[in-house]
Length: 91
View 1: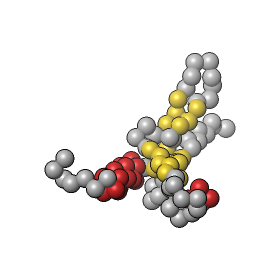
View 2: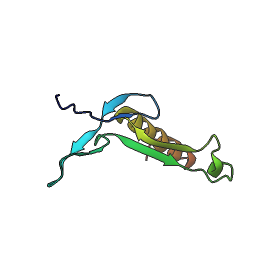
View 3: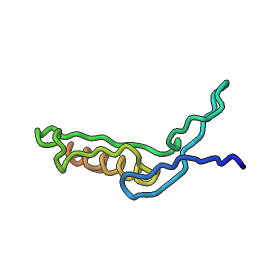
């Protein structure tokens, strides 16, 4: 019988996009280790309210985000924090 190689997949926690994990073969090992693609990201934000730490709706915990969702999350967080500082666009 032929050897079948299965490559694990990863799914974005936000949009559901699926991608293959990246294989890393170390010297002396017959099977590779797999990790999420290098351009994928993650986002974990906990608010200061006591309900946020107990899974409230203001808590964000995305372990696996595809490239586009990770970029959107960073941009949205940066815009919200800038608004909280009340900075104008001249800075």
